[in-house]
Length: 449
Ligand SMILES: NC(=O)c1ccc[n+]([C@@H]2O[C@H](COP(=O)([O-])OP(=O)(O)OC[C@H]3O[C@@H](n4cnc5c(N)ncnc54)[C@H](O)[C@@H]3O)[C@@H](O)[C@H]2O)c1
Image (cartoon, rainbow, N blue to C red):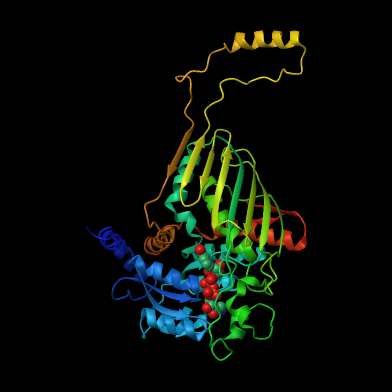
């Protein structure tokens, strides 16, 4: 039996994808790579960047030809993983000027996403940029504009939108499995030091091995601090807090399943309750969101939370409540439809005895009294849909990107989708830090006055 990877390779060649890659490259006057693989540079080679590179290469459609990072140890590891001859640098602009680079994966901290994405698009590279698409709400439209203007492929890295689990949830939702949606609850809780971003600082961390000036980029300049370099999520200067880190995954999943574009009002509250390690962002955050009517569904409310002090095990998921049932989505999808209510019931105990009797007579003329019986018992419906063991949405997300680079067809998560998913997360930060309700127009992707 052929492996999935071999199958994809054969399918890509057989379906003419390889020749369309050639055609696309010829249009751009670029020589195709010797093995017809998409030549990728990784910019930002930390935990997620290296994970992205690994998954991308595992599709069989890409190869890593260059790596850029601000820390020597990670550049060294990229050579250990992908060969001593890959090009390495601390300056991403040097990657963008290299003609053999077809596409870049951006795995830098959030404060670099906008600039590197726009610079890469302008340099005619296709881009896979990690979520959240941008760090601040004001950054988003420039990326949307750059993608439109350059007409390059841009995929944002919220892999749930490529997941077969979320596709199943979308299909069930669209088929009316829970009736009309009216409420969504979503959570992403953690309960460990690493879960709360206390990542390992390497013993050789210093200004000799880390380019601290370059790392800071547009952030306010501060003295070298290895915690800021390796645990940047804990600081607003570089990250986006729990909202930009985790809510954004939930928003991308929610928008994918429901087709909603985003909320019109956002309110977030929470606090720094446990991980008092110098961070300046909350470790418990709850957001409330008003979603307007869309795609035939009435307006609904969303309650979203992250709790880094969760006594329960680490978990994430959704509960969609509709008029006819509940859908939960996590590592699988479950639909629960209660048996239909055949009788409305009554509340007559406080009436006079004569009044109760009169009402019961009326009621039973409409709903004849029946003794409970086995045959009269109704089944409640609960159905669970599980993906196959070992299923990876991350793989499918990178496959979608690589196939789009070849076919020039749209990706699942372009700049518009990516910004609409990031926006309510970033607005949650605005609401929390400015202590106010924020209004938003999800269609125009602009703040409302
Ligand atoms: N899709 C997901 O499920 C997922 C999971 C984790 C992280 N992420 C995202 O991936 C991104 C990276 O997160 P991480 O955990 O890998 O962080 P990390 O700290 O492990 O890695 C970031 C790397 O970027 C490098 N860097 C900083 N500025 C740079 C620059 N100007 N040029 C080149 N390199 C630069 C740093 O030196 C560091 O090695 C974040 O935006 C995060 O939100 C996504």
